[in-house]
Length: 288
Image (cartoon, rainbow, N blue to C red; front, side, top):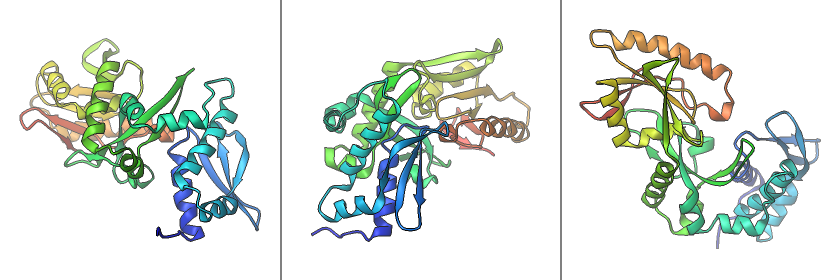
């Protein structure tokens, strides 16, 4: 017999489960009127989307045997359709499809994350990059339309339910990202300063999980290079000039990254650190 969560435990679990099934830019707000607590949905632009959901009602359903994860999916469906009524009509039947092993493997990608960011990684299978605070988590893409992406983070529970392993997801995500392809463009005509993303402009920082591409960049940069995480979607790489002190230059670059983050969508921020790719040791080093 499974343990029944108390209300406060349920509230935390339920909101977390709901969070991973809503669009990246959206937010959930727990409001109270002194008697009831409700989950209110903000579409990311300050617009409150109805309906709201009373947490105590959801808790009663949970105690009566409803599965917490499926409840979250069903509510995410309603919120998605309420927010993007002109877009793809996502139904609960489609969500069942989205959670199938086959669909997940065909549409899974890697998102780089801060492994200390518990909201993302606390219940998510992830692969750490040794010596840094970065890790790779997994997202399943449901829909892309008019610049909006609907996706969900793969939780440990979802991984277990489908019988997948971290290696299964990693290999499938690598294949899907390579099929998308990585784009490298020089910045302001400077051939030795490259901006890297995917062709779809989504989750381009995942290039950090591709050792062969990191080596190819070392050849292009003619040695070690700085990595600036502009967001989870894009990076900038800059060669380290022989004879220069990389630590001094890295501090200047760190200020640049922090400045970019000030104007970025909170959900897109990856890090305020600057990294180095060491060609000889074939590893990423967090320098400042």
